[in-house]
Length: 317
Image (tube, rainbow, N blue to C red; front, side):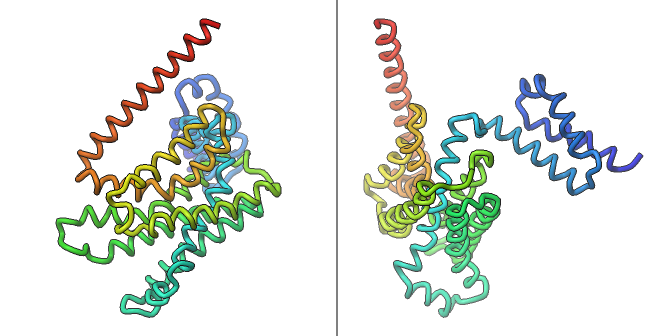
């Protein structure tokens, strides 16, 4: 018996584990038949790719990120804005402080790694924005991996610099380093999460979303002082930069996908720095969790009260 005949059922069983149990019961045989047909004459790399594609759709079903779900439609609508805001954030240091860029490229820390770090972020995000404008979604997905890589590269570069005071501040330095790296990681993940079958050839309206996103990204990063700790450390604006996008995203529950898409595009740029600022202001992670828990409970109670009032109004009508 060849390795090919052994690998196919193993790969199929592994891929099907990513599907909800009910979906496997109802459509498992159909999935197995399609998988058998598509891999009948396949070599090992093709078999692995088909199994990964099958597993990825199972993950989409579990996360409710398919083209039939509200979350999937929201992601597809938000992707051009996400690409634009990521490009705005990536280009901001070059526009706002070219002297710093020059120093990084020709200063005491100048190295091939530094050059790669300085160029990776703006180049990857700019190419992602161009791909989104052209509707080249396969290229955009590949470029989103480059954007994620650029963010992680930026994080690695930040962590290569010793913490400014002592080893006691290592976690502080790590969280601070995340503030400028995570926006790109989160933006890339959002692009990857969007259902491919909803990403069609762009219209002039969807093309216009990309430069609007670039402008929005520049403004939001400027409002945060390019993620500098001197900004918003003890200011309620830090909470607003987190709460406002979240409230916009919550509008999707009412079917208002356009404002929700705007919030979803802005959230990667604000969430890490806002949480870091609130953590600093609260005096530690436990205090922040206590405040956040109280806020979440308040929102939950308010939501339940609103639903109760809506039910009473409908029953009275």
